[in-house]
Length: 201
Image (cartoon, rainbow, N blue to C red; front, side):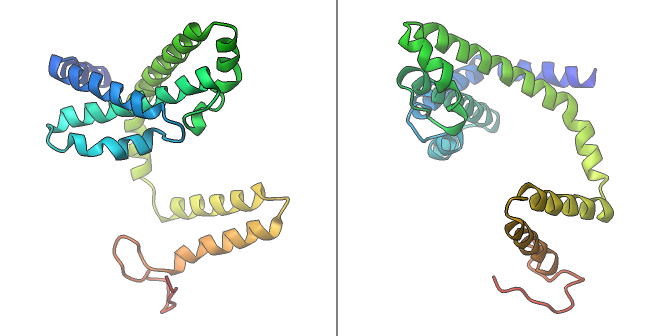
């Protein structure tokens, strides 16, 4: 019930006329930039980020979210109309969307892309809102043993996934394990178990 209360409070803030206007502007700008081939949501946000410098914090976040979702959808427009994906995530849309456009059904293809994007965004947001707090508490309970197990699992998975080139997998694992004997990235000091070994950067 606490999650629903937070969601309703967030909707109350987001559905104010001013914030809806910022969201609409962000979606429109994100779609216009996201249509360009090779420019995905991350690049679009990087390009349009200075627009939000003088806005209030809530309005800026809402506008950035609108830019992200607009750019995510904008990539499917060129995929459907000209068989040219705006980003890598829209490459699959070329398979069916462009064929529908060639049959004169570009409108239904664009509508299907918009509705599926809206539905997936809503479901993803709800899943994050519900599963985020328990996962965060679980992650904060991690200790040294759990982090070591995760690191070993990642190294083993890296070696196993490159089974056709075992030398590459083993060399990647060895290079990744150098992080354990280098310095802390956030503090700039040597790790306590490095024993004076220094890794040149």
